[in-house]
Length: 250
Image (tube, rainbow, N blue to C red):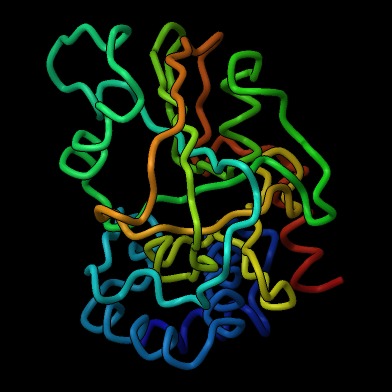
């Protein structure tokens, strides 16, 4: 069973080995998840190669997503980030579209069952990132913990400002059992991203089901990536990995 292998990495594995550390982080995420999330995670793990599981792109079923506690969303808006071509697979005059015109594209053209959203504030409610029209795309991807991102210079991304009345605290299932997801059980009202620069908690986050009625679109911005951004796990900094290891074994 994968969870036994990951537990061994967590308790006695060599955390200087990156693959061992990733599996240890995954076990921490499992251990800090509610029991019903653990049960669903075990179902996904069955019959999978334990060494490869964390490297794959896993898309849990709709019934396995948004199982975290439901909380009222009290901020003015939450932001969702995606590659522009994922919303507009074919050339389209997107600059002339009203925000509400994008709703069908969000619901029908995004593969995942959930939307990860953030108000770009930290645990204390302090604004960490500048407004969408001034944010640096690379810094945004790092702060949101978008491990695996490989944005090329000039690539267009779309930032949506969503009107939200209630959201769910993110769970390990929502992330697809990612090792880089950050378990934040002490925060009852939100999850936290793990910065891909520091390895430490960065931004408050929630998830929404990708379904009509869960949100509205207030505004959107199309930005061009300023420089190549390669946030695959093998390219993350020593500071990131050191912070993760110290979190497991201070």
